[in-house]
Length: 388
Image (spheres, rainbow, N blue to C red):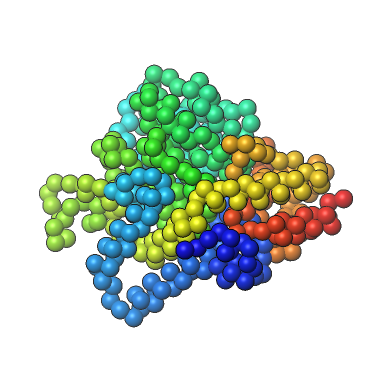
């Protein structure tokens, strides 16, 4: 069993589990993660086995079944409701394109979400759908009250991100989902910025998509797509192939009959290398415990914010409380944030430059559970030499 303490309290173990720590302070999990050793090993192992042996179809089916089970455990669903495809934008586009929209239907979304969760919905205007954009008082601050106030009798679906990628505002998924479920309104969730870092459950969610390459600590181009079983007939698959439509003996039939599970959203050859890595990542996180991971991230966040404030940095989004996340986005009056980012990069500190709609520049830190107090102290030490 992997214990959080075994990693964070023993530097040798930490570097072994997360090789990036040997040379860098990695605080960019809201962008693209550095792979843990267990994930890299799973990918290498699968690749080497594929090189040495002909892939057994039964072994492939076992891998898919076991990965669906791990993903379902992570989000609180049935394995039959999980499709193993990515990136996030693919799942979101499947949701947007698969529903039988009627002229006058309304979709509510947020223009300052990540573009992958904006463009699939804006594109529905060509099908007669009205898009209503939320306007929160603060960036990403999507509250149940804000959503409730935007609903109309024509609202058919609300599409939100579980956490804003710039401000780090983490929404109350259950409260918003329960509100929409009671009104018979569909709820689509882009969960990439919380899945793997904070409990993200689908009890009141109809559709979820999340790539593995951020907080899930997995490879690129693979992810989890969830469709609530009762919504299978509402969201028709729009990518069609030999895997998601019944074709006995790979002989095409006159009629299209989709598989009865979420396999119906997987059109063809699966990304087995990516799936191998993603399963290893999910299993690692589940073994440590998502609740403990969330607590650790919030503790690291608090320490980093406290130090940043002492240097005059302003935090975009919530500084604490239930809407805080692993994202800490900051700016400082009179400071060239791009130059500061380059300095941090030169000191082997990995973070992300970001900007808002008005062009204001920020630096975004996004540490995970395996980052340490010593690493935070080093970040602050570097800042102390350039911010005076």
